[in-house]
Amino acid sequence: MFKKLIASLTFLLFLTFIPAYAVSTKSYQYVENDHIIQITDPREISLTYEYDNFNRLILKKYPNGRKVEYEYDNIGHRTKVIDDDKTTSFEYDIFGNISKITFPNSESVQYLYDPLGKLLKLTYPDNSEIY
Image 1 (cartoon, rainbow, N blue to C red):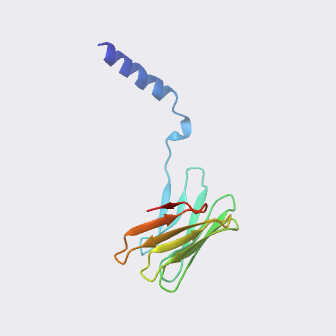
Image 2 (spheres, rainbow, N blue to C red; image 1 turned 90 degrees about the vertical axis):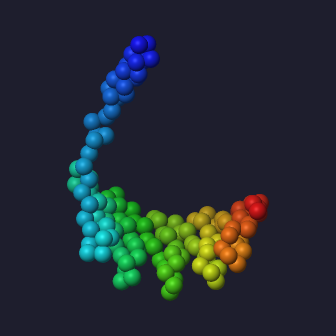
Image 3 (cartoon, rainbow, N blue to C red; image 1 turned 90 degrees about the horizontal axis):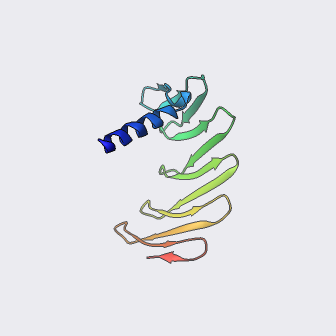
């Protein structure tokens, strides 16, 4: 009985502190290839998406004016993410595995794989390594 009472009180306290905006409905707009192009919240604030001719995401536009751009190589690997002029770059080995990520602060993380694609070594910006 005591446990049940505590559980009930806990549930009631939890319900008491749910803010009014916690329950909302968003609308989603898609194009014919099932890619989402817009998400709109109940306040009519929208996040929009743009794709290239290969159906790869190339741009996200936020309501506050922030833009995130995506660039790809000829094979389709994402090579850059540009977020408010801060660029994160990605490099790949000949097998398509990510070999290096360079962050906006110019620090990078490097990955080394065996011929089967199993990660062998991870090198952090401070040159520490995990095998």
